[in-house]
Length: 204
Image (cartoon, rainbow, N blue to C red; front, side, top):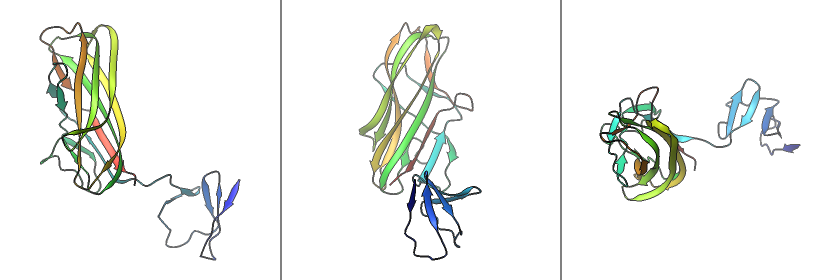
C-alpha cells in the first residue's frame, strides 16, 4: 500500500511503502525531523529520543535486609550522557529532568545476599520515586528457587510526566524472605557482570 506525501519541493518525490520512505532524489540539506538516512533508503523514525541518558554502578552498594524499608540506589557511572544532563557528583541518586515533557525510564537491579547468607525465595519491589515523595511506577519481583539461592535480579519501567527540575530516584524494598539465614548482607551488584542501571529519554 502506497500513500502519497504532499511535497513543496518539485525535485523530491517521496512515497510511503510499508513504513519505509523512498527518495527518488535526496534533498540537500537532508531534512532531519523524523527522518533517518540509511544506505538502503530513507526511513521514518517512530519517535525522537531527546535528553537520553544511562547511568550504572561500578561498585556494590550495601543495603539492609529489613522488610518494608526503602533503599535509594546510588549511581556512580555515566554510561550515556551526550548532552551533559547528569550530575553524579552533586546528586548521585537522581536523574533531574532538563526539560518538561513525558519520559520513558527503565531500571535493572541485581541484588545479592552476601556474608554466607541464603534464602529460598524472596519478594521485593523496585520503585521509581518523583521529587522524593511520589511513587510513579514500579514492579514486584518474586524470586523463587531451591535453598542456597543468593541473588535477586529485577527490572522496572514506566512513563512519567516531569517538569524541568523534577527528579527521579530508584528505590528497592524487601517485602518477604523465606528462611533468610542469620548474618546475611544484601548488596546491589555493580560492575560489568552484576551491573545495575537506570536509563531513559524524553519522548514528548
